[in-house]
Length: 374
Image (cartoon, helix red, strand yellow):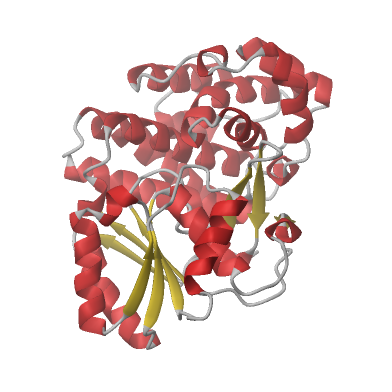
């Protein structure tokens, strides 16, 4: 049994300021900051610059992060450090910034195409160390071995899964999380719940990953709606930060399942927010899993979510949470159309996330499952 996670994980209202000591210990002196224009104009960014000033860190900034970062965006960001090597990559934002930063940390150290590393454990060279400062509570990307990069031409998301991509330092600073709008709070929170549930179901789950996953479910059940209703609720924000971190540790080590395999295709085809896709797909896929294997147990999930201990009790609870978070109740409301289902199912079966599902589906079964969810 093995459990991999970042070496250092900082939490709390002064977590960014604590980063100074980590930079000093490592004697890093230069970095590329990966973020977006909104975060570059934030107080959080200024706090980081203050830390850099104390630690005498030279930096460049790439602030063109976009949702679902593409292969082309990774290549563009890599150009910022050509001829001016840096000691580490600092990512500031949510999953898109972290995924982009991981892509840069990987691609800047090789002449190969990023497509060469799609799949599990394909990286054979050193990548730049990553410091991931989180500003959402959901993706878990600041602690995981996953990088998701969009192939715009093929309209799919590419999953690169390797221990080399686990950040050296993760930061969940409470003040940086308070500005999340309700819609982002809801979608990323349900993303974290999906991580926890799929990691718990995974054929690679173990006692350690289950402990992280179940505690994450419990905290999400108790705090997500409160954080959505009142974004200034510091306790709810801190608990959600811890929950998504634990869910991230669980799925980084146990992997995921068909919710993510399908969500990657919906995101790539329709440019939909990843957490939103997961939230809508989660009850649909759970229903499909149970219909193929009645032995899947829901005791721990039901207790964690304070729901009836059955598949239908858990599905009902998830649907109830989605409704309170104003998340659509069908794939058709996301813009998914019947004509695309065959290709979505075909591509989902190529996604490495589905390999650890407790149940495997044929393409026809996946299409039927998706039809029910329209």
